[in-house]
Image 1 (tube, rainbow, N blue to C red):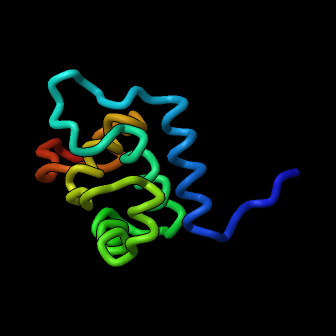
Image 2 (cartoon, helix red, strand yellow):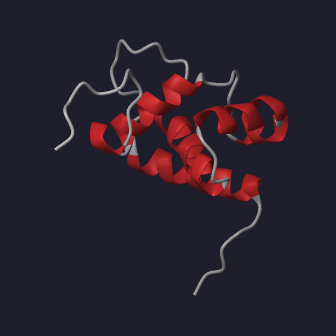
Length: 108
């Protein structure tokens, strides 16, 4: 059995490598190309690693230059970018979390 790491930097490297094996660099040829899908995947994995929310992981990235360097981030993504990326990359439905305004559906 492999041991789990407690190092955020080692975890980030591993998550980025896994994302590079699974996802193409960009979701569409005409996407803005500010962040790669593997980078966004790794940031979302860090969100779970630190058990924080989108804004929390954005704050960590903005304060932690070594973490940005490991992920090759030239800038920090906006929290909404992470929310939309999570929906797209991890195929989470709107019922599991919403990035936009509250749902107008009636509760059953």
